[in-house]
Structure formats: C-alpha cells, structure tokens
Length: 322
Image (cartoon, rainbow, N blue to C red; front, side, top):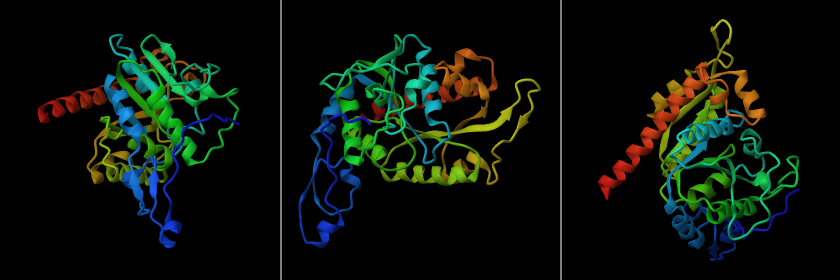
C-alpha cells in the first residue's frame, strides 16, 4: 500500500457540526463552492499557486465519464499521442486516477519511478515533447494498492498540479477516474483560476453507460465546466477482414447521438471497437502509429482535430472578450 505524505486538505465540518450549532472555518476544503455544510469557508491558497503555475500551460483538457470501463484512459493516451505527433507542440498527460492508475502501462512507462515527493517533481517522458505524471510512478510495484480517503487524494492532486515541473506546455490532458466525487471536484476547484478549456466526455452506446454519463454532464453544468463534446467509444465492431460492422453494444436508446441532441452537446465522433487498440495499450504503444490506416485511427484523428479547433476558438473568444 502506498503511504505518501501530503499536505492533504481536510473536508469541511458536515451536518453534524451544523446540528450542534457550531460555526467553524472550512480550512482548505478543495470544493469550497460546492460544499453545502454552511460552514464559513476559507480560500485555499493552493488555488492561486496553481493558477500561477499553469500560466505556462496554454490548454487544459479534462477527460471525464461517470461510467467506468468506457475507455477514458485509452482515449486520453491517444489524444496525447495525436497532439504530440506535431513536434512543435509540447504535451503532457496527468493521471489523477489515484486508486487505478493505468496510464503508466498504456504509455509504455510501467516500472518508471519518481523518487519521493519534493517541491519540484519531474514527469516521465514518452517522447521529447510528451510528458506523463501518475501516482503509478510513486508506487514500489504496479500491484500496490492505494487505500486513501478523500483528503489524501485531494492533497495528491494538489501536488501534481502545483509541484510537477511541467514547463511550457501547449496541452495538458487530465485523465480522471469514473464518478463525480473527490478527484473531479478537486481538479475543477484547483484549476478554477487557471482557465480550463473544457471537458471531453467519453461514453459507450448502451443506455447503462449513458445513464452515468448524463450524471457527469450535469456535474459539469453544476460546476460551470465547459463541455467540448462527447465521444462514443466502442461504437460498433469493424471486422479487420470483411470490413462489416457489428453492434457489440447496441444503442437501444439512440446512443450518444440522441443524448447529445437532447442535451444540446456536440458529438465529436465515434470510435469503433478494435481489439488492436487493447493490444497496443497492453504493450505500451500508440495504436495510431501501430495501425494508422484503421477506421478507429481515422476516427481518433477526426476527433482530435475537432478538439484542437475548439481550443483555438476558445482562445480567440477570450482574446476578443479581453
């Protein structure tokens, strides 16, 4: 089990304090604007420290989904690979899935180590222009379990944002765990003064996935996090030999397209299910370079182009507003 020291913030007092008639300061609650305890809230100085740190990062993109197993980490990794294929761009991938860090394996960095925690952590590099940071680099073994409560997770995310030597970046991609709780609230709060471009929402076509994804979309709306668009992953299986498409996960309620129409969101694209994607991830290789002519690779590139266009327009709108 990992036992890494951190200056983890504590949760605000909860309803028990309210019932007792107490008024106390919410010292360092990472979710000040979202906490409903009624306690007086003190701003976390780390928010401004992180904002200053992030001045050298042009674009910040979160990859979210309320559902586990839909391919967030796979998409995050290939988004990073695709952006870094332009040698003029500096790209970083931050894995904030504290309990299930899969990015080191997917990016071919399993076994890499970051020595301890200090005021300046150096990320690991896949390419000269593609940096990666994950709690997986702080574990003695990939099989080690991280058994932490929320405050310690929040402290770890704070340190990733504040203490990692990211340098000047064109894109910082943040891969998140499933759900709408500690890690998500922390990353949004800590980056609240640093201008997040937006979130990419990942889903699969079936309703059991879409139900959880709708919750993630509501989360983004509640915390005023812009949504770049939705990606439907595992959207049919294209046979590598006959090229016919089969629906492995039938979109019984219309899939991501119908959901986007109902919720006024952009469908960025559909990535077909291809077993070679999983094989590439297990081997720590980029599917985009391993099978560049596949339908899935074409879908990835189209989606990445849409994300790049959004980020460029986001900057243009801000400059016009300024």
